[in-house]
Amino acid sequence: MQEFGLTQEQVADQVGKNRTTVANSLRLLQLSPRLRETLVSQVENFTEGHARALVGIEREEDQLTAMQKIVALRLNVRQAEELGKRIKEAQENKEHSDGEPLPMSADSFRDPELTGFEDDFRQALAVKVDLKRNARGKGTLVLHFNNQDELEGLYNRLVKRDE
Image (cartoon, rainbow, N blue to C red; front, side, top):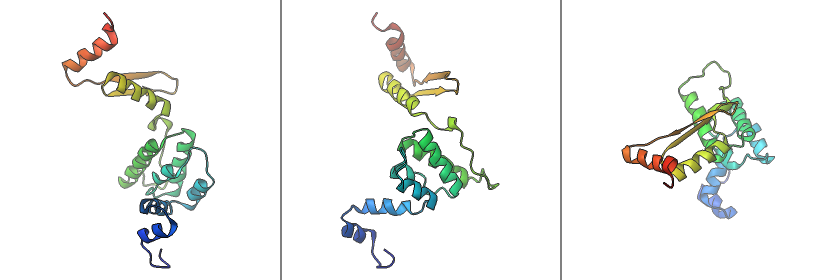
């Protein structure tokens, strides 16, 4: 683009792709070289969508740590975006200015299985649901309701059932 003075639209026409595809590919060039190499080597469960979620994380170490978490915890793209957002917010807030990589514990990310259960509960019960589990497998299930009618609806679905 720079050498020939082309716009993203012109490049897209030349290569037969959508302009957004070209734009998204160009964004990946903002990643550290090591992360781009990982993306090219097609590591399982690390796609361009996952990588784009990490664009804007300043420190290469933080990008690499985030990528390792994405792969190890098998995060989906939405979860990777949440991870990237948290890291960027921490960097912007200068919560971590001593030069060390940002701490990222496994409990700051959602287990994909847990997210699936939470979504299923939410759909079945039609209320906001929070599901948490600790390292030993114990956890809590919180059902939120906004008024008496929602509480009674939950009660009828869970307790009374077919009386």
